[in-house]
Structures are given as structure tokens and as C-alpha cells.
Length: 105
Image (cartoon, rainbow, N blue to C red; front, side, top):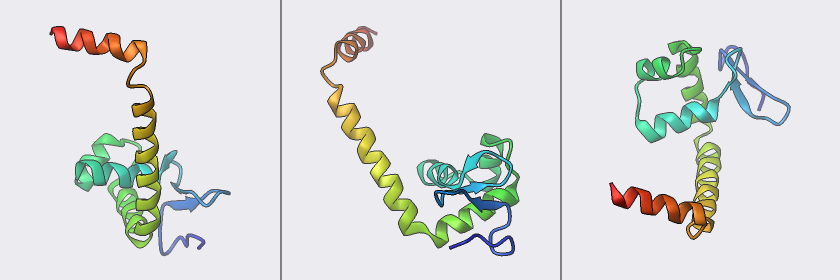
């Protein structure tokens, strides 16, 4: 679905159909992930993403809510991948050494 400037001002889709905030080099999924993880207000997010205006964030969140199922699937897949990678390194020498350091403190 193409992004209409009247429907989602400030947003565009790249060639792989990834939604971006126009001129800010920030993906809509990054804003959605921050919103979900921290429950930040638009004002707080504008501080965290200084290149974004509140209207850009509102537009990104509107796009997220209109495509929530797709975004949530992508975010869950990313989280699953991170968990798998973390589990795969549980016995690594570095992780074991770091565990010893943190238990000493």
C-alpha cells in the first residue's frame, strides 16, 4: 500500500516497502518499538529522537496502528532472533568471564 502524503504525512516507503520518516533516517518500526518498550509519550520520544517533530512521531504511530499486526510480527521475530543468539552464547568464554566479574561486585 503506497503511503499517501495526505494519509501519512512525513512518511515514505523504500524499495523494500519499509516505512521511514521522511528526511530523518528513522524507521517507523524503531519509533513503534520505542513506544511499545517504554510507553513513552510523544513529547518524550521527541527528546529521544531530536530529528523528529511531534507531528512526525504522531504520523509514524498512526501508520504503526494501521499496520499493527505486521509490525508486531516483525518485532516478535526480531526479539526471538535476539533470544536465540543470546542463548547460543551463554557458555562462551567471554560471557563466563563477564559473569564472574558481575558476581564479584
